[in-house]
Structures are given as structure tokens and as C-alpha cells.
Image (cartoon, rainbow, N blue to C red; front, top):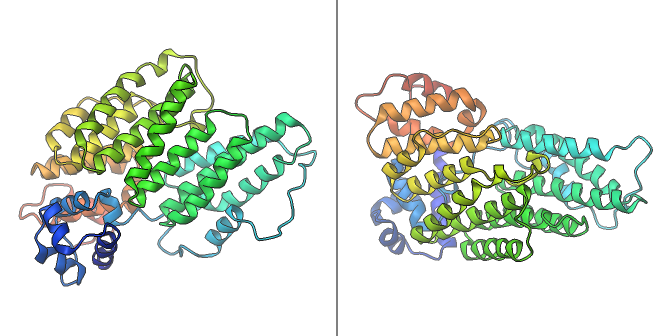
Length: 405
């Protein structure tokens, strides 16, 4: 975590929530004096329970307060040439030339495979690689939309929708949520031309996630529930892909409800989602898993663990996580969240050894996420303040770049 930025971020989020320091203190249970010291940068860090309480009082995810994992290596700049190229691809210049039909060597199937690979890289935290590929992927997809064959043209719009959706996710990771929403709106427009009835709902789910990142919880809840209901009404959840999209929207709605303070409603939605997720495997297999919403019994349970630990129920979180068997298609990003939340729960319960064990597992299964994740660094820093440091903590501190400080 960039410690010097914590106070600035806290003040910005408090202002966005239209709260005074006193009101935030009342909502979070954190003293006004601590809030004031953090915002004035007289205090540069806080223990995880304090940060949890402040995030809950602000109605945001903890990483929103800590700062997201960097989307590019620390030597890159967020608005460097590579990201400018992504901006230009998402928002072409005024009066830019219309796309030309694809040439004889063009392969729509290869393009779809490249976009699917991009999603795999995104979930593996290979953001720099994705940013490098995105401009060409978007340009090639726009070319496909100019095909003279109607079916190929529709497939091209589908590819463009998925490429722009991917750009939106990368933009969120860069902290550029307004750019993300522009990209997602254009993705929805392209998806509407694709003839795929599930593509618009998938991108709406990404939009709901982006609204959450902006603190627009009511907007996120509203659009997720509306589109999930539309899928049911239109009879689109009888396939594996359709049920996955419905499930992802339902989980988004539950997350928004929880962050709005309605944990019980969120828990009920999650339980319903987990029951329905068990049906996915019984339905005919769908399309490439990399191109469809993440929804399985594993993903729902991971999200339930996350909500439990975020809202002060660490014991419930550990019970939910106990004995979990992750499905083979669970992306590294989701595995990362599970292990981080298990580590957080152990930390909250005073079990430093359990926290270290979870972090060591994370280092094995997702080292890239571990090294750059602000929450992993925050947990290690919290454990480092203990009078009796647990075995293995030193190597974890070195791995995340903390050193002996």
C-alpha cells in the first residue's frame, strides 16, 4: 500500500459519501481523532480492524480504501504510451475512418481465441500483457464488424463487445472508472448488434461492478437485479451459460446490498445463488468458460466468505471456507480473494499462524497477485506489529517488498 496516499483516499471517499468526520466516526465506530490524524497524514497507517470499520462506514470495499493492486509494473505510469493506446482504441478520434472489411487472411475464430486468452491473462494479473494486446484486439474486432457476411458481422460485434468489456475491466484496475464506463457503454452497444442474448447482461454485470467501485451502490443493485429478472422472464437460464450470467448478476446485487448495510438480504441472495449454482454442472455445457461470467458453487462460496469477513463475521467466514474444493475453472483472481479473506479472518480472530499459512498458500498458487496486492501487504504489515511474530512471516514480508521495516 502506498501509505502516504491513505489519508488522501480516506478524505476523498468521505467527501464522495457526503459525510463529515464526525458522521463517519459515528457510522464506523472509529474515533474522530483517528480519522482526523489519518486525513491530515499525522498518522500514516492503521490496523486492519480500523480499516475494515472505515471501509464499512464509507460503504466501500476495503481495497477501495487501501488502493487497488497496480495494473502495471511499478516502473510504468498509468497514463503512459501503452494506456494512451488503450484510450484511443476505446474512444477513437473524431472523424476517424470507418473500419474496412477484413482481408482474406483474417480469422474470426483466432480473434475470439485471442480475446479469451486476454481474459485468462487478466484473471492472472498479467495486466501489462493485456494492455499491450488490447488496441489490436479492439481494432481487429471493429474490422470484423464491417464484414459483408451477416453472421460474421454479428460475430464481429460480439467480439468487439467482449474486447471492450475487457478494456473496461483493465481501466477499473487502473483506477479509471469513468473511462471504464465509457468502454462498457460502447461494449453494450456492440453486444446489442451481436444477436447474442447473454452478452448484454454479461456486460451489464461489469457495469454494476464499476458502479460499486464508484460508490454508486443503489445504481449497481438496481441494474443487476433488473437484468437478472429479465433473464428469468425471457427463459434464458435453462442453459449453463444463461444460469452463469444470472448467477453473476445475483452475486453483484448481493455485494451491493451488503455494502449498503443490508447484510441479511445479501446473505439470503447468496444462499439462493449457491443453490442454483449446483445446477450448472447438470446442464448442457456452454461456450468457452473464459468468455462467460464466473459462476459456480466455488465462486459463490468465495463471495460468501468475502462478505462474511468484510462485515465482521470472521468465524462464519472460516466455517464457509472450511473444506472448500475449488472447481478447475476458478480463476487465479478468485483463488486470491479466498485466501486473502481467510488470512483476514484469522487475523481478526488473533490467529497469526493461521493467517501466515493462508498467505503462504497464496504465494504458491498466485504469486503475481500476492506480490502486488495491497491487502496482502496490509495483512503482512499488521502481523509484523505483533510482539511475537509467527514463523514464516519474515519471508512473506520480503516477498511483498516490506523488508525489515
